[in-house]
Length: 513
Image (tube, rainbow, N blue to C red; front, side, top):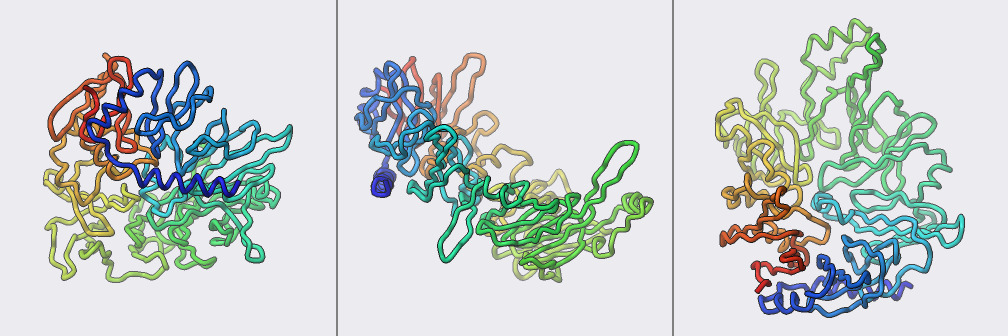
């Protein structure tokens, strides 16, 4: 089996590397060859699902059948990835149609990231490992799980399901005598762990962790089962985030009253390498790049509310503090952003920031209020100025490069940034797009490459719900066409339905005579 997996992985790389835009003539020839199929799917790794008379197989971009139409009940929306097609009805096949896992009843298939999810997970974590997990029932009561990474068989597991990092694709493991042993959910339960929480991530550099519960208390381990935060945290506390090995956990106060139980977050503590770095800071923390900002309590009414219940806010939580992820205090409070910087300004206990160059010259004359990090792997800081009517009333800053862009609040372009179809540094050339009328083709998936992304921006559509049609417009030529169904560009081809049959268009919109 290992030989087969190695071969199919090499084939998949070859398919990806050979992908190229089709000419008008090639696209028209492809469309002529697929005219009699009942169904044609999107291309991925030079393979597209085709169906005729309830039998399914696969063609390449020349329109040739490379996997015979021999399968029944195949899902129509699957994708080849790293040379593998996963489906409950056939299990797993390679790019030539060979079965990769043994015969058996397929119970469950997980593909991380899912082909139906946006690409922001890939964009947030450049080191993401595409993982495919397939579990078969070989006989009643006996299950075997196969785990593939980049299309190669990583390990098998009997009667268990591996604990997998849903964002990075890492599998929880321990090392014994130099050999890695992967850990499953049942094994974790046998060791007394009562909960497994996959935490959401906040930046490109973050490695996933697990929040585990044992004997009624919570702790944090990394994906190699090294303890980051010991199991000392009571259930009334909240483990808030895990940032490059630093744990933020929040102490809470539970108030029992006639209104019922109310939970109030009081303070945040920075924990790293099983040690408390900084204790009892302001409960709300804002993450800016590699920096943590605590704005300090200033609400006298909330403090009085707590004092009436015998709870006092510590002095450390009332102070404005800026720390690095290593727990080092930064003073004066200045955050580098590319070649520029953000400097804290406090007036009447209200925090704002000046955007300056490295020498302290103001690049924006007005103080900015930092909202938080959003988009592009949580790398973009959204800010507001004091003058809401100003053109810079909502400016965004890339904390890694220092690039800035004026984007209206809640503008749909943020979705395009998150999905990776637009670059923050290139926003200026996209400002004239009719974004209020058209949206880029939005079915982004893990097979999307940069050229597909650019084409998805170039070809925009507006859905007419009443007439059930899509109006696709080429923003460079202004040409608009109507289709009954539209996919996104995948493998440099756009799949559409026109006059009740399937067609492909190349990146110039050609293919239909």
